[in-house]
Image 1: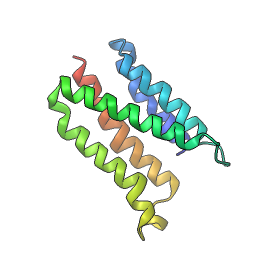
Image 2 (image 1 turned 90 degrees about the vertical axis):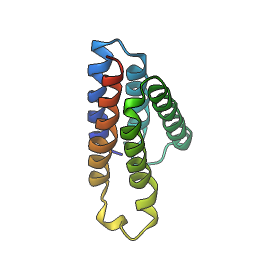
Image 3 (image 1 turned 180 degrees about the vertical axis):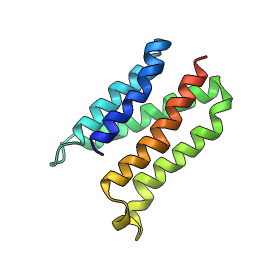
Image 4 (image 1 turned 120 degrees about the horizontal axis):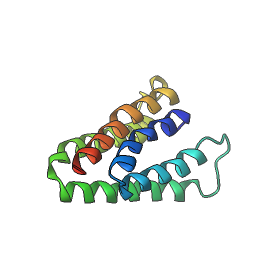
Length: 125
C-alpha cells in the first residue's frame, strides 16, 4: 500500500467535516496509521497486528453503517469483495504479475475507499 491510499483517505474528510462523523474520523486515523506503517520498505514488527486491527475496525464500521441504513448493503458487499480479491486472491493466483502495487492501490482507492466513503456520507443524511 502506498501514498496513493493515504491520499484516498481525503474522501472521508467530507463526512468528518460536514457531519462531525466519528466513524469517518476513526477511518481516517486507522488508515493513516496502517498505510503509514506500510510505506516502509522493511516490515514493521507489529505490521500484521495493525493491519488486522484496521480490517476488523473497518468491518465493524461497515456492519454498523449497514445495520442503521440498509440502502448501502449492495455497495458494502461489492467493495468488501473487491477488497478481498485485491488483497488476498490476486496474490495467490497467476494474476499477480499484472497487478503491480500502484494498480492495487488505484483499485483500493477507487473501488473500496470511494464506494465506502460515499455510502458513509449518504447514511449520515
